[in-house]
Length: 141
Image (cartoon, rainbow, N blue to C red):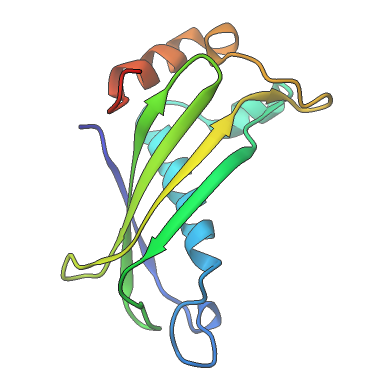
């Protein structure tokens, strides 16, 4: 399975009054993980934007398992769970340094024209990228 990993040093600003990582920061870490996966697969998300395309989030789910705190290092593991004509589902695990799962998540994205937000198939924009995602996707349908 093609899995990208990115380590993140947890900053004080990412915590709440209870000293735990504020829940919304996990979404930012997921974005960092997706960007790393795209890079590891040999592509650049910024290149799509330059060509006039964006990849909005259509659905997002997170299950929090074990709190993380300032000073720890989180590892974000990201993979392509499913990729079809219009949607890509990414899977995530956010881990403590000892491997304990802090959170598991999924996000579903489409590719769309930046101006109109009309969906477009990745295969029409970048056939090589589309083929790579089909190759590495965990689920085939």
